[in-house]
Length: 280
Image (cartoon, rainbow, N blue to C red; front, side, top):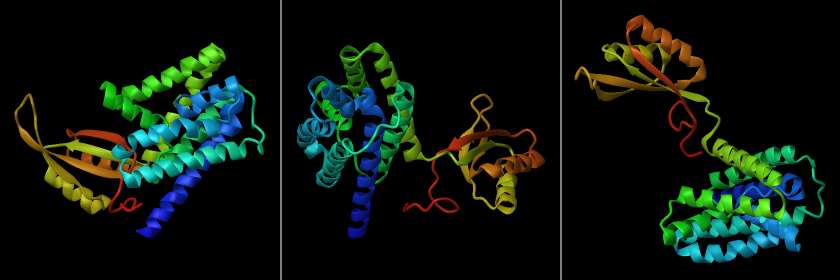
């Protein structure tokens, strides 16, 4: 358990470093305030000259202290660690690196992707970097606004502030950066979508289940279903498989029941036998 905690802290530190790289190499030097505390700190940096990392820490500490009871001690310590690491790395990298581009479009896209990748790594190891997550929880608690709406409200306010402090065009680039960050976080959290799930509705579910086990070497789960129009009861087979097996399962189903109804959809992450270990 001790090693698990150490690995989590190392993962949070690496994620914080990657996030800081996205800020320092792309977003901050191009005045891209892509929402959140880092975006607010970027605006403050250009208005009054305070370092971005220091400003993020100053904003995050009171948010952290206010939310500590809700976070719990263990998760709270991870949040504090991530918050400090991101601030230290941001101010530590700023004087020693050279921005990779001064094209605002490239900066918003790649800065958002790199920062999002870093945040996704932090989340995967059970931490956060504070910021909008903590603020959203406080808004939710005291104003009874949902977490999702609170996050949207905070990011919108920061981008509007950027439009006033800089110009509308940079605020539009900030929206692109925010979108890229969000998508990359989801990608890191949920995976690339390497697996597929098939739902098979058929009058011959027993035969199909045996064929899937014997010919595809996959398990299947029978879900109880009932047709709304006909009122007829039948089993719905749920099968999770790899992309390369989609064509084979279609052939299997067609050979047994050409009238079957089949739904194939993407699955972002599969844990368990035949796929990724559940402890990963």
